[in-house]
Image (cartoon, rainbow, N blue to C red):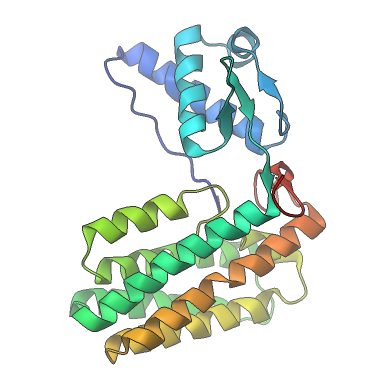
Length: 260
């Protein structure tokens, strides 16, 4: 998935059977939310979910809390949960926060000096992306490969900064709904400017890596912050086309415009 990757929940002090049921409930509930079967603003009745998901109340409660922690549900003042509605401004803000933190990571990597092993791995990622972008028409497999290599490159760039504090913050920012580096890549699949946009993104990858290697901190930060803004174009595409299964899961939860 290009965004909101499913993570295996790890509830504490559960018997193996209960743990498996919690996993099942969390994954299925996430599918219902991101697939639009539970629309934005819908209040989630615990008993109805027990019946729908085919598990007991304990796994359902754990799944509800997990999706609340992921940012997909809101806790209601009187108890219970509702499917969260996002507005365009919130998503753009989340992308900007992620880009700002990644820019800081790039600057620190340049100023502190990145390990040669990480630089070599990053170059290999970019070589792989170059190969994927060589054909004039991109296949679904090419997009999937791009998502994987792109995620790996962003992770390596963050690791180059040598800061566990910053790594945690970048990971937290990228985990926000629709804010990951590849969140809107797949929405571009059907667009006429798809390959051109990815080529621009790849040129920015090369530029930031060069800046890190040449110890140019300010340049590395500026390029990385600009790079994150390509996701804004993907967001605009997603909102214009409202792509679901072939694009970004959960895009129906995003409303156009500013804050409510």
